Length: 281
Image 1: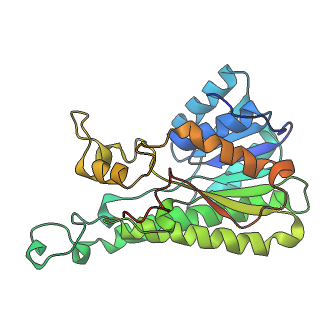
Image 2 (image 1 turned 30 degrees about the vertical axis):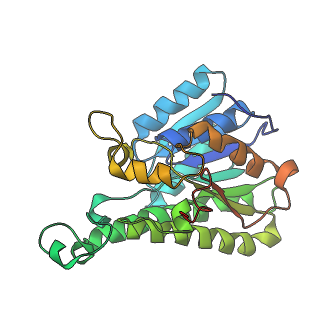
Image 3 (image 1 turned 90 degrees about the horizontal axis):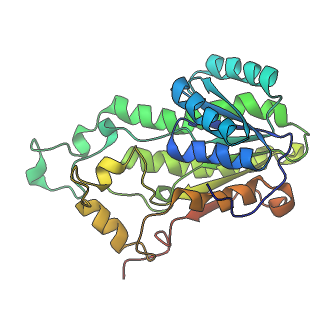
């Protein structure tokens, strides 16, 4: 991975949730490449450790931890182990989240003839919607409750949440995920104000469309051709392409750097190729 610029994270401990995945493991790698000690947290501990091993193979300091962002006791146990292994948390990146098919409709626009023919809004699984909200919102709140304790009155600390361009304009088919990410943006602002007197900044990144394991089946058919949804996304993205994961790194480093963004607090930065800015006309 090419780092666009260097910042000084030497001796800082950066905790990343959801780090078994593509984007969040990249965030951890970027932090380690700038001198940080990276703690990679994920429900899939093997994936987290595999990504941590890749970082150490490149000369960085990293370790993986299996834990559940929805269970406070699990997060507290991870925190104690991280303190023993690496030290106390300086920067928390709340990357755990995602959608679930049970909270997704089959149709973009409701039509009466769709009733009993496909999964409509009226068929959404309430437990699925609850799962999506919990994973995204509580999966950010609980790690923050646990790790922000280590940041109080400590120089250069911060929280970076991962929101989504869904938070600005909801996408069709995924009402729970869109609503949950809007809640993350709101929560980011709330945290920025709440912790402002003890030196903890809180900001968020709102990625647009990046191809990941989570969404690739929505974006591409089994033969690799783009789906109708992909064609619509690209038609409404002024830059005419999906984002490359490494294009999030510059914004991440900017927000992690006290020197670069020390007076930036409570912002949600879109990285979406202009999708949120385009009206479609």
